[in-house]
Length: 304
Image (cartoon, rainbow, N blue to C red; front, side):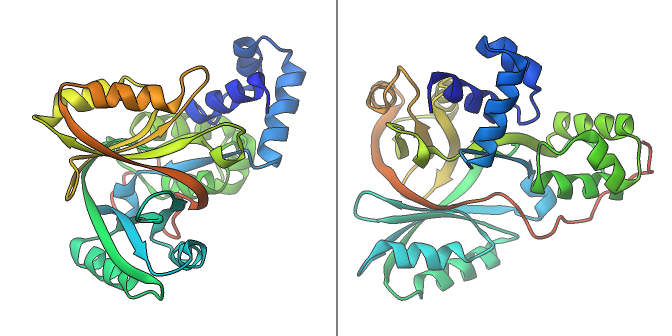
């Protein structure tokens, strides 16, 4: 990984379908070199471009962050939790709770059952739960409600984009039986309406010197002003308001030349922040925002 690779990963994270020409223009290299670098980064799993479907369409209405206290080694527990299809993130971290995970469930009852199942795993001594009130920035997925109606072809496209966010319009068109132009219009509408976000999920553990830190924030006052200021920080990859031991949950990734300590100090210094707790991700065992099924609900006519 050199500086140009790092910039390309950032471009893919922002727009997973960015063209080689645009990558070349923004990094100052040739189009052929841009294509070669993108191909290498994708083949090497440094970044994985997927379409992350809105949780509303996946039937995921209850989201929670779990911190696990353990009686023994962390990796066996993390690997056991990673087998769950409802766990989108599983990571071994520093601190007194060495495994953290995110669960996404259809309702409160299922969330409660899932927490009980995790608590019953061998090696788990206790579970601390933060339930999400609202997600303001997701690592990959869109936030907010879906603002368009979907038909079966739209849902088919979402399923294909979950597998490969950079699949060509020609390949997508061949699969769903539309023209590439019609598919392009549909994909653009799905992105604009928050049905899906197509981005690159960077495997930060492969970066030399890259630190990813979880942050639990207790507020001194109202949440909206703090949330607005944190969203202005590009290093904040995830931000949710929560219920439980903290009012906000953040994931912070340092970016050259701004180290994670500088970011955390800015968060601590915010007048609306009372205190923070932090943990550093040591080994991300699972980070996947795919789903086995998309809820086939609201539909309209098949207008290409």
